[in-house]
Image (tube, rainbow over all chains, first blue to last red; front, side, top):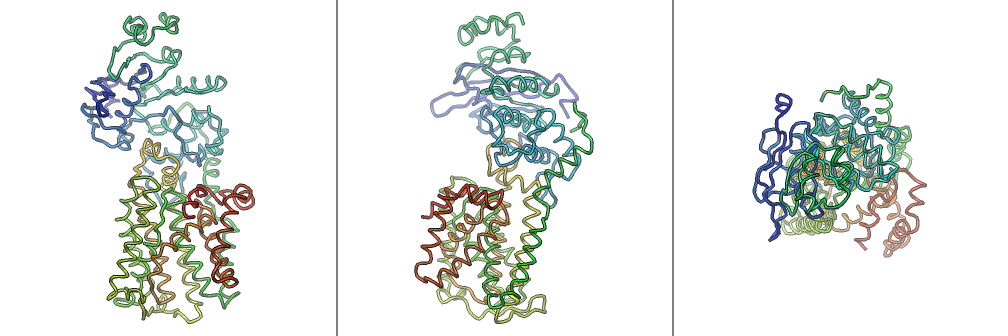
Length: 262
Length: 343
């Protein structure tokens, strides 16, 4: 694929995205480029339009104007599920799981789907060892092995959060949009989650939306600040941390001070 | 994708994964036993052949609704549209073209599948409430069409004089209904096996995924609309076959096959038997039909009262406990609330 041939290329580029709801401009001329293997954080105060931007990128919302390219291909008019098939995958801030299934069933289905077996109706799921191998890998990677036969609705919040990410990774993402992955996770289960986020494959480009500044500054090598639907600034974590504009608008509190040298 | 992950899986792990996955889809001895007993019923209760046939047909009809409602989470209060269309398709085909029953069922399946495919576009959008109304509307339209086109359908007098040939050119439909009972059960069994394969497949799991969380289903790349169109088409086809079998085994078609009661009763059966597992429809059909026949013998006018009482007890008093007594998938998956719509 393109990305593999030119590893430094931009994998996702959004150009001049505008979204208006009636008279409200939720997204104003946003341009965002995601490099291959990036760990890019998108930050901004509540109501800055982060979720709207995610919905535009994944195709849940249609932009009023602007263009989105994935791996050099214009995907502006593709429906959400076709964007997923091309490698644009997201996780959700609020868990979106399949409550009546077990993690094993869930991941088996997602992996089957992405190995082109989603429409197979004549044989039982999980017959191919290729699918099972990948499912086994994911169960291990996301520490879900011991709960693999537990119905999802009965799992702990931390495990559900892990499954949320495992589902996304099972889709073979090229670009992964992580929407507040550690939101609401109790301290006891937090480290496990942070470790799996840190261990996500390097060739997957990640756009992270997060309020937790510890995670953002540990994780990101590039940051974009969104305010009132528009890009305020973009830069390395150091640049953002020292940007007086950013401090004034958003990060004006002491929370950030400790990270300026890290 | 290449799978040189951090973890190397050995074949023993994979076997245990596969065993867990296939645990529910394995054919169990109780299941075999059930079908053997079912097929012996006409010999054990020779005077109830027509009733057995009717139960098998109803169970097949319930299976169809379970695929849509139980597995895919799409409510339908007009499933009789497809059943009735199947009844008239089979009856008219036998009357005017060919009396072979199996050929008739194939025609039924195709015609009703086509009708289901057309109707499927109406259920893709909107809320449960709009779907209830739309599906109900379709059944009412068909009912009125059948009523108005009396030159073809016989209108409110019903379509009479339908003669059906022998099954496989060998087994004549007899008067007491022995052939009918076995014929209905065989067709029901055939489609149960088909549905069984279907729901255990990756495609079958996409149904459940859509039911559980449509938003996420889209976000993992499931073509939601396409899957729903397919399942609705298949379900309509099965409902049509159930109707076709009814027409063939009774040699008669009347307007009541489109009636609202039929759709509503069907939903009650699924509520009684449990949605989202294939045998729920059978259990519901058996319980409902037997109750109906016994109660209406005792109290012809007020038998619905007892059915109503049973439902209220099931839903309100014993929902969780009864769930525990019977089977893991339970009596009242998601339908407890929806059943109240009817009251």
